[in-house]
Length: 141
Image (cartoon, rainbow, N blue to C red):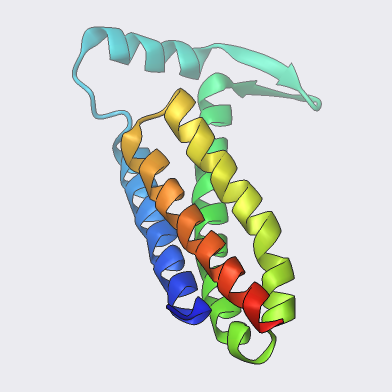
């Protein structure tokens, strides 16, 4: 399979991850379990001073969650753009894919260690597709 299609499939995997994460982010406080509600209450009420401001743990969690959504969407766009460039600039595309692969593999590892199977496996699939594209581009250089 050509690098262009492999990278488009990888982009779709990352969009799937971003969509799922966004849904989880939006609905994260909808639990009716008392223990879960207590955790959210504590996260919202416990503040720490940082950078001259007072922030709650919930604000940190919320901000990092939004940062991940932005990062995933940006990677999906970048992979799509590189898929187009792979035809006319295989060497540049090859070089640009390595740091993206590093990050997506990192997401896969943290997905297995700290989260759950769906995002982890999605990142594994995206990583394999990127590796296959890298291999294809390496042959074109």
